[in-house]
Image (cartoon, rainbow, N blue to C red; front, side, top):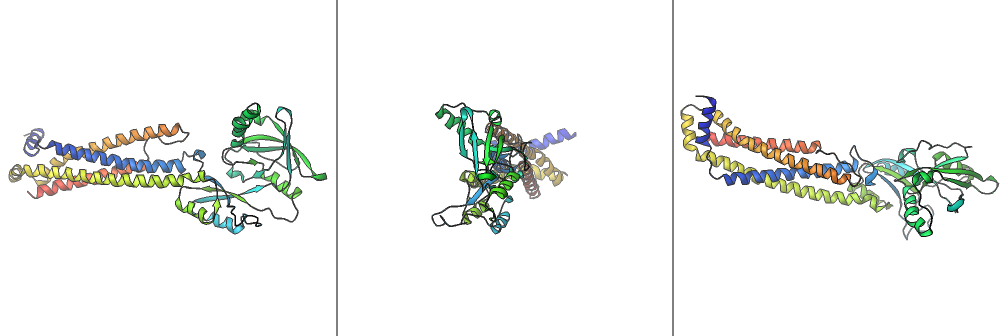
Length: 401
């Protein structure tokens, strides 16, 4: 008797076709449960990728934060109440999720800016500097040495937006592109009295990270030393920090406990993370429940199928078929159903990931088009557990006969 004929006989004796609705209900529960499990892992992984994955940029506005001590009614008017000490800075470097801390140094000397022509204006101009590694768009012209009459500056992109969309239309002035702003020369009068010096400032770049006008560190140090008050230390009222995960609740709690102020919009992801964690946890629990119910119904269907074929099984065992061979035959019939359910769930997850990648791309964010490795790992683990449970259930049910 050929192996094919032998298996056809076993199929007719052991695999009855009744109660198929229970089988389809079990497979549907397994599919939905596995899909929800994979989707919950996918959501968690995508959120991590948006925060600090390899493709991350500062689109989320969360990696770099500018902080200062909060001004309250209690400390108003108190000298140095909002100044950071070296102890404060050292403590902040050890705070949860903080990777680096930079000091923002401002000018402590007078700077007067003047521009002629159609856009003529004259105003006091505050300048700041930060360590170069905190600048998001480093222009090649970003250098200055004492004695140079030309001063490169970086302007916040928000300033240009305010001018183009608020100030210029209201005053009947022309709107300006970034390249046209870079071509404008700004006259600066630095210092006062006989020691005053003049410089020509050029905008060499725009920053999406820092909302002020930046000058090179060498220029600010030069001006503070030459034109500042002699014998006075430069106070630090603002810091810029690089946080690995600003959505971490421990990090947000640290800022709150020390009464440090920052743009609350920059910490919006801490609230979003809490929501994502609740959604992922709830989805994961629901997925496990559905998978458990589906697995239970599926195993009960297998055991019911074996129980209905009790007489046939007894006869087959008596005529020389080994329990191992019969168990393998039944496993080969039911295990592909589990694998097919897993494949269908993965296809649905891949489609969801591709759709998510397309949606966030339209918002200027980056997500991979295929699910990350945790999703594949979850699929392998869940499928392996189901396969082991099904295999053991079949073996146990046949050995009872």
